[in-house]
Image (cartoon, rainbow, N blue to C red):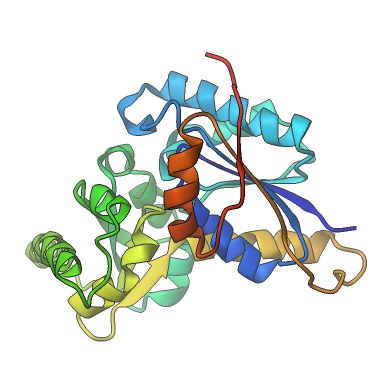
Length: 279
């Protein structure tokens, strides 16, 4: 029987994680919830983030039958992973995006020096720095607050003028980050994308970084980790890949979710159901 995988984000950026999951496990059933009524999580307290994230996790497990949970939100992964694990049965594996991203950086880096770009909230949590340090890496983090709104405006195409604006903003951030790394005597060879919006900027990012620097997409890293769980847990080979079963839920603005979400997912989201998770 196909496994049911629940995916949670505070918005719809986590659909890049879902996109990577569908590519790796097309035979699975997916339920995605974006807590769009209460975003952004980054401006809220750790206790509030933990409460909101636990509500979404319970919805996916108790009402959608999720057997695995992927927390496709860097803020929730940084500040609420323990609360999410406590909110669901111990039999349900909970996978965040930060630890897999750090592990992928360790495998990719030869110098041991890693750069991370993320949102303000994720950088202020220092979750990537801590995860990298635990693996023997030096990580330098940089908040890039303008990138998320530029992605949501669709200014990501390097061939048009709006994409050129985003490329310039990105280059300024990366120049500042590289200058700080040089001042600290670092020799970074790996760049971690610490926000689920950033995979849509990959073509621009790869043009802006020095040749030889590896780009680590935490969305893909989290998907790879889930596949490891699936391979370990399946006693029999997976069924043949057919049409992926996917349901999307949002706590507000389903029309916006359908419009922007399709860009992040790389395919139509289909009808998005409105749900109320409470206060």
